[in-house]
Length: 190
Image 1 (cartoon, rainbow, N blue to C red):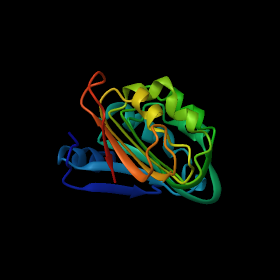
Image 2: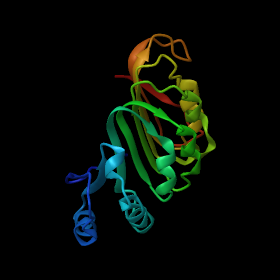
Image 3: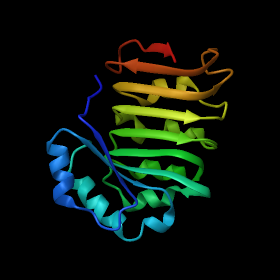
């Protein structure tokens, strides 16, 4: 079952982080996401963000978005190895996405990459422990059969070009839910 937060608090391109306020927001039942729209905003703050990721629960997350005219460099993720909730969305392109394999603490991954070139990254072993995975891509290579293998519990949501998906479905979006790995997967078209 998906957790309902009082609010989602977005901290956009911070220069400094107010740790006390972040912790208070989390105690108040909110989800807090530190987000970055361009590499020039990362600076040394990602190391501080990673310290918070190590200390706080999965209601604290990191989002990379925008990066207009740039491809997001997945090597950036090496600076936040303790991230539990990660959003890579509203991105046109990304490279070095195989670095997702290094994120051993990841509970929740949200991919919204317009041109997700490396869909094999979705089959990596690290993703088997995810509780939540959502994918948005305009490529025609998002296959439910990949998703069936990687999620041990929780929900998978996918939107994008689904002209011919792995099981022969035709859809613009679908959602796969599963209560436990050995139970039947339910497919709901969005």
